[in-house]
Length: 276
Image (cartoon, rainbow, N blue to C red; front, side, top):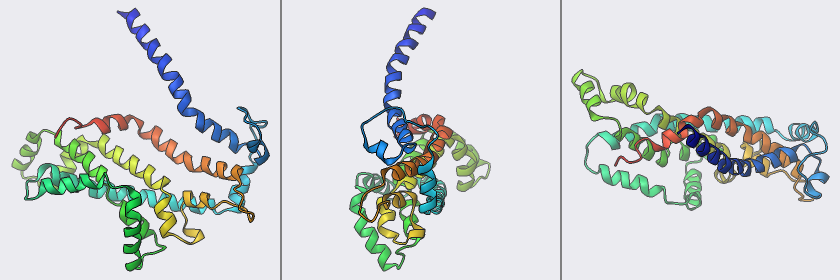
C-alpha cells in the first residue's frame, strides 16, 4: 500500500511539475526582462540576463513617473472596494439565503443575470450615469460599481445555505436578532468564502484598467495599470524596459495576496457548491 502511494505521488509530481513551470515561465520572463536594458529586450530571446543586479529600469520608473502615487491610488481603491464587499455582500446574500419574502427568487435570478453581462457593455451607461451625477474624475465614480459584487453575493449565498438551519433556530429561540445570527454564527462558519470574495475583489480592482481609464483623466489620480499604460516617449515608442519593470511592481501585491489566502481559495469556492 505504501509503495502504491509513493508511485501515485510520483506520477502526480511528474504531471504537476511541467504545468507549474509553464505557469511560472511568463513571470520569470517578466522579472528577467525588468533587469535588462531596452536593447537586450528587443534583441534575440535569451533566458538569462547579462546582469542580475541591473536595477536602472526601476530607478528610472520611480524617478520619471509618479508610480508611488499610482500605487497608493490603486491600494486605496482596492481596499475600499474590498471593505464594501465585506459589508454589503453578506447582508444581501443572507437575505436571499435565509429570509423568506415575496420575490426573493426573482431577485436572485436578477443577480445571476448580471454575471453574464460583459463588463464592456456596462461601460458607456456607467460613464453617462457618472457624468450626470457630476462624478467624473473622482474616486467615488471608480468605487461605486465595485462596492457590491454579484459573484460575491452568489458565492456567499451558496455558503450560507450549507449552514444547518438548526443553529439559527436555536439562536432565535435564545433571543438573538437576524444581524446577531449573521455576525456571530453564519460569518464565522463561512470565513473561507468571505476571504475568497475579498481576495478576488482586491485582485479585480487592482488590475482593472478599462473603467479607471475612462473616468479618471488627471495624472495624479491615475491607478497603477492606467499609469503604466501611459508610458511612451515623444515619438510614440513604448519604453518596454520601463513598462516591464513597473509591471513587476504592480504584480507584487497580487502575488502576496495569493500566497496569504491561497488555502482559502479552493475551500471558499467549493463551500456550498452542491447546495441549491
